[in-house]
Image 1 (cartoon, rainbow, N blue to C red):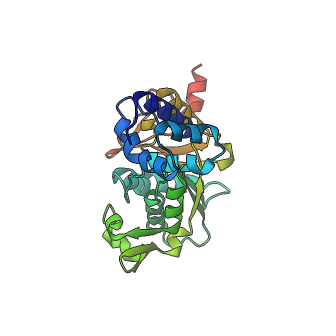
Image 2 (image 1 turned 90 degrees about the vertical axis):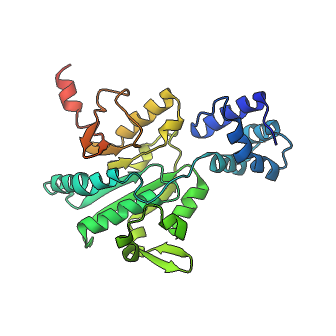
Length: 285
């Protein structure tokens, strides 16, 4: 099924409204390859018909299929390595030390804001177990969210094929954290026990998710326009504690969003603490 220039514009507007992803005029091949099967399964003879059904008919299931098909679920365990090294060797030790002087010494909240099929939150869980060891008496929660129903379902199962395990998994953690079942590997209960999986659209209000010490929002906003991207990270900063840490993708920079987003460098990684700078900025105004 071929997409016409007019259909491309309509589908691009629909996708942008559904999940914020920008599809330019050169993405016709992407629409054909990812949404062609959705159109056929929905009994549509053209992308115009798909657009009409998704836009004007009361068919949330179809809109979910479009989101699932168009969003990129490319991920792997410990993706890019360096953010997880910073998490283990700098951010978490600093956070635990700072909290030791508060009434919430053993309370940690982390949000994996675009968890895809779950490799990122499971990687975070592995690091927490390796760093702290016995978590008895700790109040640790990892919220893992994604816009895709299919991705969240797969992530919550914690089941990965051998090819997925081979992509980034640290072999010294495999036996500790996963049980082999034929060709698949199941995340152990102690790993999954720290994680709650939910579907969340980052374009919607985020006030109900709570406040976090650490937020990972990596390789999502690169598909947004500049206004949507800026709005997202400002709203994410509102979900961080005063000393909270924000991690973005290795190719992303937030320096253009607001002076509060000053990059912090550690080894080969960058993170942000946008709320930590607020008092100093206020004092100079």
